[in-house]
Length: 164
Length: 350
Image (cartoon, rainbow over all chains, first blue to last red; front, side, top):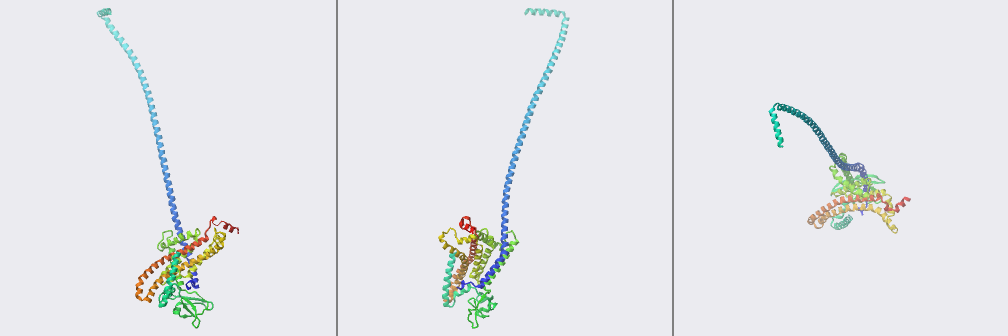
C-alpha cells in the first residue's frame, strides 16, 4: 500500500510548484498567447468580413453601373429618335412648303406668261391688222392704178359668180 | 478508456506478482526492482550506481530544520540519526533501531520533486519562447515552436474548454492549459529511461484533482447545488437514494481523476519494467542463453508498449483536462427554465 499513500513532502512541493507554475504561466504566457490568438482571429475575421462586404459593394456598384449604362443607352436612343423625328418633320415641312411655294411661283409665272402672251397676241393682232391694212392699201392702190387688170378681174369675178 | 485502465490494472497485478515470487527464490526480485523504479527516492539514480545526490530537508519540532545531501544516506548509512529504508527516511535511536516515537516531516527534494522542478523549468522555457513568438510576430503566422504548440493550445481552447464549459470558458482556460501541459510534460518525462514517475505518483495526482475539486466546488452555481440536493426528474421516493449518490458523486469525480492518471501511468511503467524484468529473470533462472533467445521478443514488445505509452501520455493529459473542463462546465452551466422548474422558484423564494 506504500504506492497509494501520498508523501507529505511531495504533496507540499507539488502544491507549491504547480501553483507557482500556474500563476507564472497565467500572467506570463497564457494571457499574451490567448490574447494575441484572439486578436489574430479577430483580424482574420474582420478581413474576411471586409472582403465579403467589398464583394457585395462591388456587385451593387456593378449593378448600379449597368443600370446607369442601360438608362443612358435608352436615353440616347430616345434623344436620337426624337431628333430623327424632328428632322423628318422639318424635312417634310420644308418639302411641303417648297412644293407649295413652287406651285405658287409656277402659277405666278404661268399667269405672267399668260398676261405677256395676251399682250403679245393683242400687239400682234394690232400689228397684223395694221400690216394687212397697209398691204391692202398698197395692193388696192396698185390694183386700182391698172385698168385692164381691173376689168379682167371684174370679168373673172363675174364669170366665177356665174359658175356658182 | 476505462477498459484500457482495467486491462492495465490487470496486467499490473499479473505481471507484478508472478515475477516477484520467482525472483525471491532466484535472488533477483523483479517486483522489488519495479517498485523501486516507480516509487520516489532520495537521490536520483539514473542507472545502477550512478546517483545524483539531492538535498534532504527534514523538519521536526524538537530539532528544527535539517538539510543535508542524500549521499550521506546511501547504502543504508545512518546520518544525523536518520536512515533510509525503501526510499523512506526513518529516525533511528542510539542503538540503531527504528524510533517510531519521533515525529518529523520529510520535505526533501526527492527524485520526484526534482523532476517536478525540472518539468516546471521546461514549461517555463518552452512557453517563454512561445510567448516571445506571439509578442514579436503579433498578428502574423506562427513560427517554430510557436507553430508546433499553437494547435495544441487551440485544441485545448476549442475542443476542451469551449464545448465543455460554454461561454465562461476564458476564466478557466489558464488552469486547463497549465494542467494539460503540466501532465503532458511530466508524462513524457516519465517515459525517459532513468526518469522519475511523477504523474504516476498519487501525491501529484491528488493535488491536481484536489485543485480541480476546489475550482468546481467554488464555481458551482445554485443550479449545480440544487441539482445535487434535488435532482430534477427524479420521483420523490427515490430522493433518499439519489441525494447521497449525488453527494458521493461530488467527491468521486476528483477521486476518479486522481486514480485514473495515477493508475494509467504507473501501470504503463510496470508493464514495461516487467517485460524488461523477464530478461533478468530468464538470466537468473535459465542462464544467459535463454535470456538472449527471448530478448528480441521482449525488445519488440517493449518498443511497442513504449509507443502505446507515448499515446497514453497524450491521452491521459487530454482526458484529465477534458474531465476537469466537463466538471467545471457542469458546475457553471446555466440551466434553461424548463430544466429545473419548481426547484428554481423554490430557491428564489428563500
